[in-house]
Image (tube, rainbow, N blue to C red; front, side, top):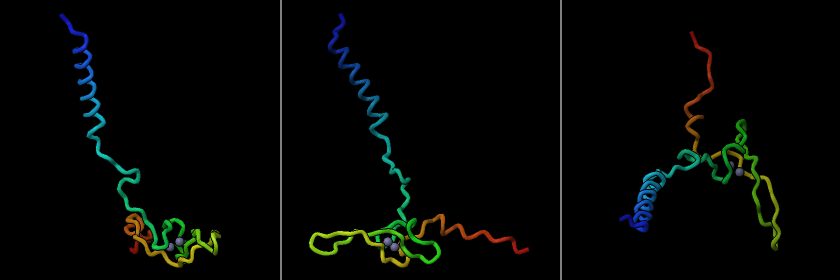
Length: 98
Ligand SMILES: [Zn+2]
Ligand SMILES: [Zn+2]
């Protein structure tokens, strides 16, 4: 005699275990791949800093008075955040000195 209820429970357990094994133990990975974001002390990304003179082209939202706010250009003049590894280990290519 086959009991339909226990069959259903058994099937549910199998599916549940499969789902747990498939989705439960998946290592959580950050979208950035674990790489540290190159962010300056001013709070802006390295990308908005000028490569030539280091000035920041970002904008800050500052209070100007009684509830007044306005966007103003960032006063940062030099990037102070961590240097990305790609930039650090990729010096400008020089012609072979032979
Ligand atoms: Zn900055
Ligand atoms: Zn900035």
